[in-house]
Length: 126
Image (cartoon, rainbow, N blue to C red; front, side, top):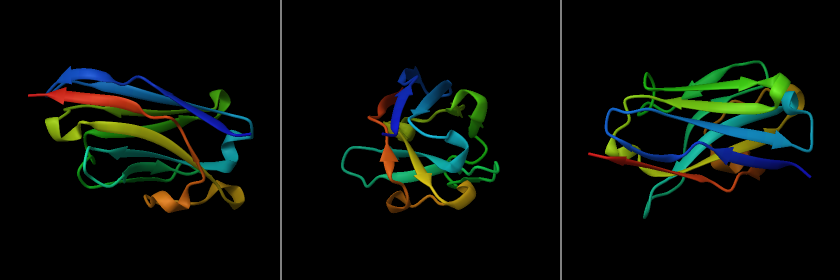
């Protein structure tokens, strides 16, 4: 059974930084494309960054240049370094995993992902 566990959320002032982490257990991590999603109150869940098994990365425009996604296949870990945070980045953040042939999927669409973590809250104050 694949499980994802996020960590690293918290509260920070605008302009600050946070680093989120996600650990996958229960299967071979390198076979999975991984993504970070977020959902603010009253809004739909949106994909903000994804990295596939080959290290191909896509960002949503609103976070490009501020957020950095990375993965460590040796440690089954996914990270999201968030810099220059803004109040509008306040949301529940989720990591997600999709197992596809050779882990090649590159997508910010939530319905492409099968496994989800429980979420970690990020709050940015002005």
